[in-house]
Length: 367
Image (cartoon, rainbow, N blue to C red; front, side, top):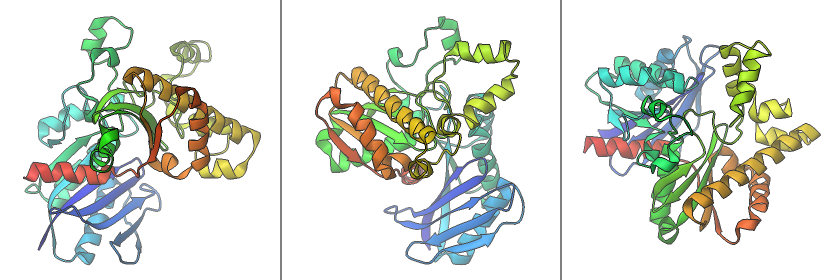
């Protein structure tokens, strides 16, 4: 039997999974259930084997979880799942490191749903499905996207609001922490001299942010209390003047739910281009609107990078990761052109691997 760790990353209509060997963290299998709630389908593969596709009966995360387990049961080579690690976007102020899931943890994380409405409910749904289907004797671990940013100086965690609001949780948390934690691991292993220096890391995908890192620790980041803040994203607006939100509500008669849908689902590259949130599609399209959306995105990323450099007192390297950061060379080049006034610095592209980071956390817990 091979002791294994299952990682889960649940979205609103998807459930991504990977299976790692506990010893050495070799990747054994990967896949995803997509279109949950509609014509859901599992696409998965063992490492080095051909892809398997199958329809998924049922329309929720429990059905998706069952499909993942059925695939593992049918295709494993004597794996024994010893832990399930879940990506949870928001840990608030209480959870500053990965933690075993308990009933109290679930209560605390449910209270944070208003701070991460696109992500938190689905992460909790995946935990519930895993606990029921994998068995209570297999530990579940919550791995938080906010945890990497815990411990930052108060200058980087406050808004310019009265202190009682900060004490009630109105503060800058930061996100994409699992991705940045992985970058710190890779830099320490492969580029130790840069790891000790001043790194501006850009996780650019459908969700996007930048992080100022020094000696593998988060100093500052662009996202704030929620994962809609900071630079523009695929469908999320990024930072918007609070007065504009008030205007939409008071003068345009928009309900809070309508504004929430606007800034989370109908803005960003999609809203500005009027066409797509897919950067590859926008690059191919070539229309004036698409070009403007991409130019705006690149400029905002560069401006945010400059702000991160100020927080660090300079920049030694710019590191790109995420779907856009890794694959959209024209966007990277546009960002770097805007950053020319910052002087010379190294540029790296490092593939994201939040799942391996989660497996590392789970292996440490089991040990």
